[in-house]
Image 1 (cartoon, rainbow, N blue to C red):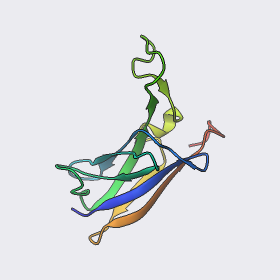
Image 2: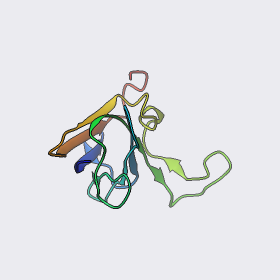
Image 3: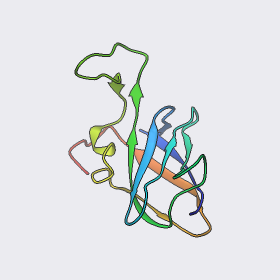
Image 4: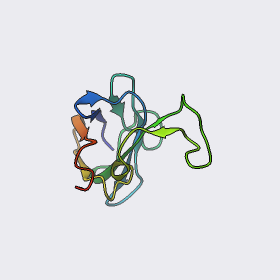
Length: 116
């Protein structure tokens, strides 16, 4: 296990809500809440314990829960393009090193939605 900290950007601006989740090549995945300044810190078993060492595929999910909810979107309006929600299609990876990672930047864009 090692600490992992970073920032999530959407079209160059910090995303201020949501969750980051990982799928490692082996072992248990990690996740972390996105803070109002766009930062996140991953944990696996307990708050801020980090992530398993090795390569992780990464997904980002964010909903605007302040608006109306309904059967098509029970969580509210999706704030990120769908491709980023799935670690298999997001294109994001983190290689967790023994000393930790404190400079991870996940840059998303709403443009070129057909590209991976």
